[in-house]
Length: 370
Image (cartoon, rainbow, N blue to C red; front, side, top):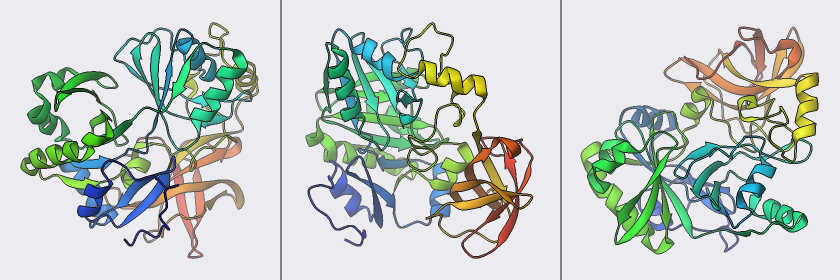
């Protein structure tokens, strides 16, 4: 397997890995100690155009679930996020920044409310299970915390709904954006949410029981032949254009939600108590020192962004590109950067210094990029 990884049990395979290998995977990343397919036979540009027109099947089992259940479950979830969750309804998904006492971002998961006393955090790449377990013990909360045997499979693209309706029935069309429902599969009830890590629409099947992984993949794949389905993975061009940020790339614990454009998910008026209330109130009062911006910049197609690229304004560095790539639709390079306050105005002219030694003229833009 030419994946560049020295495989061991510390890097977990997924219920779909056998099928991913059969589909011709060319490389992996590792997220939450689990394999995440990153490339198949198509180029990233071919994959991008296909995703915008048809439908793809993605192994995103690395989106592990942290289950918080018990009398104090809602209380604990509210303690770790500045977003008000007390009005959330069963069947709803919420994007929630998870923070520490200084307002630093620990993770940015999707919260699924399964019951008044049971929640899943569908996490990005950090050990949220350990964080919430430590807080629960320290605070004396009456909760049980674990990682259930749940392995998400994403079906993304404009034909995703029609495909899954063929498989699960017309009721699937009634699932609203960032909502979920329960659907029968092989005599089991499975959670399907209208969500996913693309701007092209789609669903995530939160498969409960890893033994059913190959069966689910095969079922989606078979029906998908009518819709020009291909194997895929989160597409970097689509992600950057759409302003979908990646924990560990665009943000870490060194950043706070107000820098990342998540202020609308932060309740800071004192009506909700959470671990970062005082810290985020102070940051809001002072104003964040930098904010996330899109960057469009010229020159030939950029190489892979393995290390951050400096962003300069009038010769002074004001930020760095953390994710960047050529956009065939916009016919220019696109990137994401945290930009210092002195230069973060949309439309600001900047330069991007890339590893090929070029200084490329660019400007700051809003998300999604048009």
